[in-house]
Amino acid sequence: MLNEQIEQMLDPSSLDTLKKAISDKCTFVKNYKQDKHDKKLGRSNDSKHEGIKKRWVINTSEQSLTQHEITLLRKGMNFALAPKNVPTKEIIDSVEQGIKHLPNDEKNEVRERVCAVVKHAKCPQNKNLSRLEEKALKSLRGNKDILITKADKGNAVVVMNRADYQNQVNEMLEDKNIYTHITDKRRNPTSKTELELQDRLLRLKDTGHLTENQYKSLRPSDSYPAAFYGLPKIHKIPLIEKVDHFTVDTNVKIPMRPINSCIGSPNYQVSKHLASVLKHLYEGDHAVRNSKDFVDFVMTQTVEPDEQIVSFDVTSLFTSIPVDLALKIVKEELENTEIWKEHTKLTIEQIYSLLAFVLKNSFFVFNGKHYHQISGCAMGSPNNNAGEFDVHGRPEKFDHLPPLSYPQ
Image 1 (cartoon, helix red, strand yellow):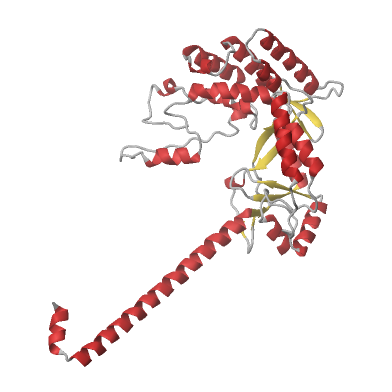
Image 2 (cartoon, helix red, strand yellow):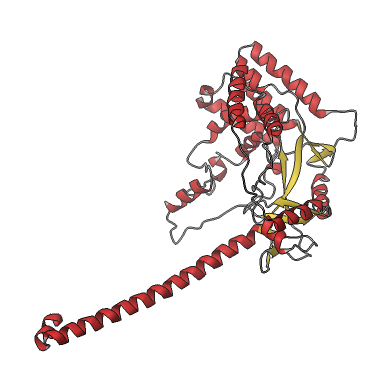
């Protein structure tokens, strides 16, 4: 309407001039706004990216880090240094260690594939570290006063005083209710556990409860003790922001999560097998597989004004679980369901016996000393999901005040 009125009032030449002026003004405003938004977005992205990069490195030690050391550590614990030559021997050793439990025909197939890959493998032409970063790497490697590890959560790199780390881990291991130091050097718990487990598995194979392939896969050989270490719970303490990294107050004690890495230990393969059977017992409406599964669940929920969301955090959950109670609950669940029978020929008593053995024979090494975990489940072992029955799948525990839902 307005456009028609203006066209009637102005001659063609004046109308063209007006249209051009309006178009130029619109273009100017559009470009101005676009430029303004682009700058805002750029600052936001730069700030977010820089914040993420800074959070990669958290220095809790007394040592100052150079700029190049921080840049190197920002690459993360999964960064791999480009080798000068193809590490053929190391690759073969790792593959042989990984396939030792496979049947012979599968072993040979893996070997053939690995040989084909190694034969045609070439090292990168260019280094993935600068000369100054290589110097920083050499400096960090040579500094025996610090220890570099990953954080318990957040995928960050943490630099600690080595003495502080060892003192805190030793403090955890001094808890006589959970751990026992094996002082008799003549006692080798790894060999003893391996031999006893071999005997148990052989009897199960001879009675037809394990196939030949299962027996070979589960039978431990050339085992070594589990390794114990601690992961700093950086997310539990306040961080002090620096220009290019984070630090913590020197008076703050960093809590540690105890990890018992059982890979290669006598119980590892049996624990994995039991976990694959037991996982079917608590697949229900209340089981959450991972963070994404939890987010998907929460997005479907509506919290009414008279309702509350409550989160429970248990300190050292797995080491706090009574093993005998966990075993009792597992046995009850096995007796009350049939689905697990689709995944194994083992009987309830055989599963119970194997599970009790691996849970009660948890041995590990720290700083060259052997320990026995006498209480709770080991965090880092496949069989720790047995302990989850102490908190999973037990809705009757809430009979007096049932929640609407309780994902775990």
